[in-house]
Length: 549
Image (cartoon, rainbow, N blue to C red; front, top):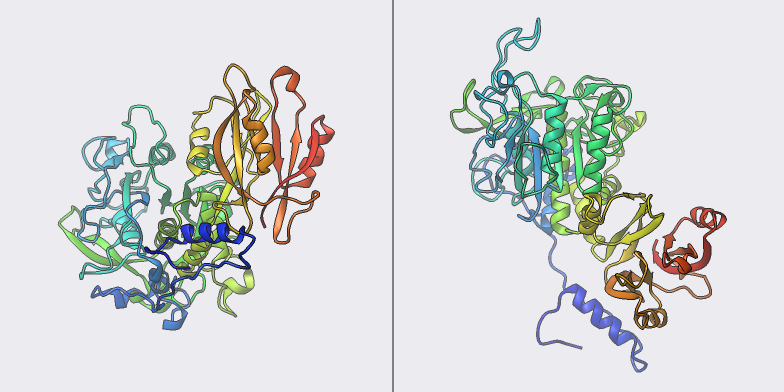
């Protein structure tokens, strides 16, 4: 069958599903269009010096294989990455992709710009004299640290000058939290919350919330995640954002530094051009490895080339320079995450982390990272991660929330709705249980629409109900106590409580409070939770849905 216009894959899959349902049709499949898959490269003059964007086939096992990832695209302006750092200098590599940011450095002595917090996140320079940051601390010129980090993420690889970033179209939200001698935890946490679009007293609302936050900053020694970081990072997770942090440059375990040791942050260790742990890098069993450079073993060109300012003290104009550290490793991962979001905008921070770890390459045989198992899951790989993100386009993550006041449960397959609930838009008491499952986002593989209902205000319960049964859906639509809200997601139907191969069952329990107009159901893929609910007085209704395995 041919159409007058080219269909999208979603449209074609839907049409094929409709045709397969016709009794006279034996089979119907989508005739996909394939294209040559030659790797895309940057033509910028200094790209040849950027080993970190190459891969094993070019002789750099420690690179992220960005060229292969770019065959799917080089990013999207709809993706916002926040850089919580020393501020950013204007640079032709960024063009007009720098969003209005904020300066959260509250101490004027450290801010180095004549005042405390203000709406100017530009980096004034962080040059310090000997012992200015502590007795015995050496003098150092301005680092232009935030500008260097930003170039790794987002330098334009198609403008014919300089270098390429991991993603060429992403917009950057500059959040200045570091001044001379570093930054305070309170300033960093306020900057983090603001970057998410959450309110910060005395600061205008951020109108461009970030989906990815890069924290290339040193950790605070602590045995366990510091409570303020734990709370802020939980908020980030609730908003569907990914927080990428540098593991640290102390040649020690990242487990004793916050925020790298926090469960809701993704720590990144630094690797050398050949995929082993850099000589200075912290290490740990969680997170990822990414290029940070190692000039101690391989010379200055083994560092990471990126954007800087030419001034030693004060800003004088755009330039390029080398640097190394886990601060350089983290933005490689943030850039990959931005490419993934450009490919699949529905991915949440939780999914981004999972897919980044799933797509990581194994460390080279014989390397310290390979035999020690102390460099996280593996080496960040842009090609694998973006390909996996593309493969997830037909699925959506379903979140479960619990209200401690109502003792109700609620499902949503929308990351935007989940973020609003975390902000309190659905009222107080709701928390994400972190019990997730994957459903389909369209009618493929025999998946049926899952009807979503809400109790009609003033008549029905303050609760939601979900069903994939067309018969049950039609019956509930006739009940004035329930209002149909549309399709929540897609799932397959069980046959006598048994799910098809390659799916997993979703069990449904009922609280039996209909007589109080307080009906609520819980849906879970965990049979142990289902049995526990039934023992606590809920009634088990068996397998209601079958979702993606």
